[in-house]
Image 1 (cartoon, rainbow, N blue to C red):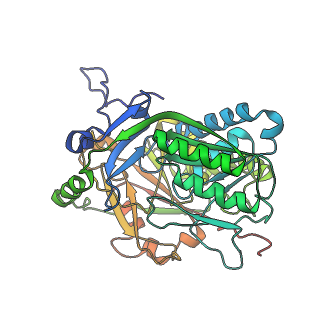
Image 2: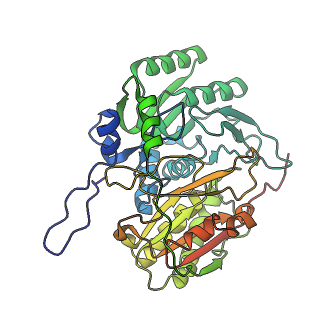
Length: 438
């Protein structure tokens, strides 16, 4: 991991950019402690949430901040290799990986790639005719019901190690809830919990150790960096005051709308679009074989573009990430970035010391079962800095997300993207349905 740098000018060398949590630290006194790598991994922003003031914004997750796809995939690969080393070859070959929606679906999948294990992620999207094999609630969530919908009902029934992957551990409550729920149906002797950052307190660590002892199971933890977050006592009230005083975001640029090209990205027939229903070694091999053709198709549409964003869609992170990585191999690694839309409402402040510089707010476009309506894309619009502008955006959705709400009206995501870039490519992947619904 290397520090971010400001763009050089003709008469000076690049200088380190401000830490993307400094704006929040200066105004609220929120501070990171622990590993010196933490500021390279995460910044800070303010949640529009009365229960929790701050959001830890990962620089390497590929959710809120556009990042090189090789960095995003590589962060998970490295963690997966560490899990394999911990387990040893025999147990690693019996392991399965479970990732958390929505933010950790690609991270978990990348960990599974590094480990060489089958993968499943939780989902908030129910599927008609498919009965959940489990579910749980998530702390700090905006839509808390997580469903487990594997195509194979025995996916989680083995006794090999279960690897649980999330982007951060704040208290460990979500992981503990998951372990208890799954252990009640299919007890196993070994769990491995994986995250980019572990920010639990000593009391949280003791709570997990006690729970593991009560279950009679071993629970190991692997994280890229370990530390903590210091919060002032009145941080919630202060954050609400800052949000209330924030200036409205400037209007998007006027002018001609960017053209839209549509593609199916040569997606292989019957290949899952992610781990919602499980992703196996055979699926992995088929995807790897198909990526060069998919990248070539996209590259032909993007000829001459020098700064391209591949934008995924909520839980649909892994397939867009891998497409972005393959595209970067064709166009050049420094010409492609990757990020994803999200449900989480966060204040945008166009300041280099703040992690969320700009925000596109748009209506949900996949008829969500929970009736929620607001969705967001962060750091896609350039704001006041023209160097941050993308000259093309590749929006990747599945077929269930390709609805009139995506296309129609000034606030629709596709229409807003057309106002902040020179070209939009809409890549629509088939929505995978289990072949044998339960």
